[in-house]
Amino acid sequence: MKILYGVVGEGMGHAMRSGVVLSWLLEQGHQVQVVASGRAHDYLKARVPEVDQIWGLTMAMENNEVRRMATAVDNLRGAMEGWPANVRRYFEMAAKFEPDLVISDFESWSWLFAKVHRIPLICIDNIQLINRCWHEEHIIGDEMNAFLLAKSIVKAKCPRAAHYVITTFVEPKVRKKRTSLVPPILRPELLNAQASDGEHLLVYQTSPSFSDLPRMLAGLTRPVYIYGLRRDINEDQRHGNLVFRPFSETQFVEDLASCAGVIGSAGFTLMGEALHLRKPYLATPVGGQFEQLLNARYLKDLGYGTYTRRMGPTDLVDFVDDLPRYREALQGYEPRDNSALFARLEELFDQAEAGLLRSRRVRWLGWEAPQ
View 1 (cartoon, rainbow, N blue to C red):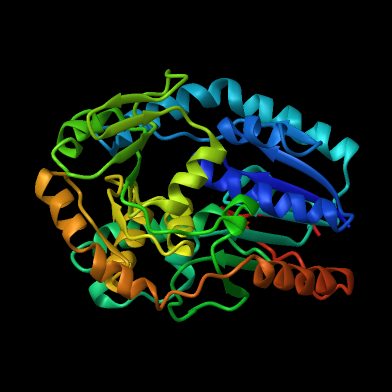
View 2 (cartoon, one colour; view 1 turned 30 degrees about the vertical axis):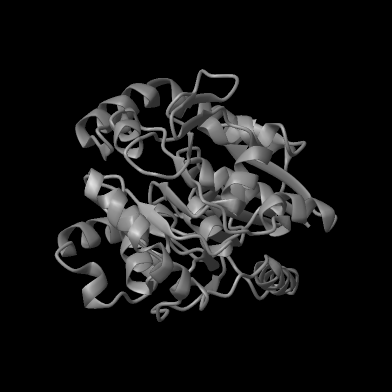
């Protein structure tokens, strides 16, 4: 089967899980053409053979919060060159590649290609959980306005796909048809890792707004391995109980598998990896990004960890004190591999080949994709 695969470039989690799916698709003998924006392009270019770069939206961050005005301005500037380039890429793609199926990881260019050419579209991501599942009142809490805004944005991002495959560590009730829930998509390195109970904490933070975090971590009585806060280092830097480490995928997985707990953003990918290894998690959701807050609230509700919007010394102490309670709750979490995802995709591919998985018509402002 010939497959066009689109990957959004904002947030490396999309690229990492897409890398897993793409490797499997190639192993199954499918012919795959990838389009990706931002850092996702560079990540996937080193791992799969056919990757074209497109322009995609970005987010402006400050103090661990999305700055909406700066985001709008940055994207308007980028669109001046990005949109014409995407149009050129569209016609180039239409001339050289005729896919039987399109897969999108929250990426709009591939969605548009699928709709214009009336090709069946499968969406694989975690963010559609916001729109396509029911969420209990205590999870939404006092964030109803943020939830409704996020829901409307997600609904408009890749509407009317033939099917939505949602990767998730929770199982809320599905409210929309053509929706499947599967466990978090995990890299082979994670699936092969052997978990152990070490003393150190693992910290992964890249935001400059956490510049004061090392001072707070220095007050703990256990080792702390820190990734992301010093991106320019080439070797370990030690300061008391703190070890700043350059990013190494192998070393990171080893540290994750043997840690006592994880401190990081509420991004889905790292959280899913930590839970697979049954590691307690202290999340710091990015402000203005409801998807991360939803992840954090489900994490706390399940008893697998907690979250804070403004990190303080007491948050760290309380997290360490509660590690035994989180570990006990995590014994009820069932680590699973990617087999459920792959089995569901095989079923959907069979439906596509039989003509049962069809492109769904979309109409915006009077425009309708041609038959």
